[in-house]
Length: 116
Image 1 (cartoon, rainbow, N blue to C red):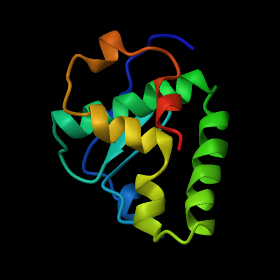
Image 2 (cartoon, helix red, strand yellow):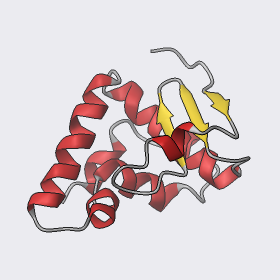
Image 3 (cartoon, rainbow, N blue to C red):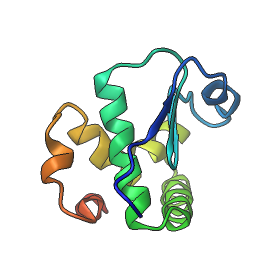
Image 4 (cartoon, rainbow, N blue to C red):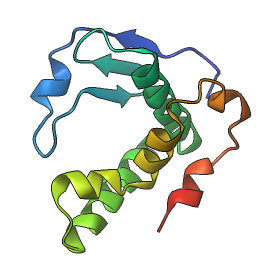
């Protein structure tokens, strides 16, 4: 997939509409980053990390693994939010979202180091 910039959509009702299991503030549906309000640089950086993860897994692989890791957490007895926070994609994005230079130095498949 190319190095196209993500398309950022702000003030969207979609995140709230998709908030079935957890409260969604922003969501990345390649190539879109969709935010409930204006967002900020940190949130956008978090979502841009998801863009890279999605590109690595040809988008559909990301979503398959995302659901797999969430269900794995649920089977372990984790709450919806704890299962979400335990997904390797989220662990990488939350850990690195404050580093504005992270995407420039990020190695491919960096999320793999967050699998537990």
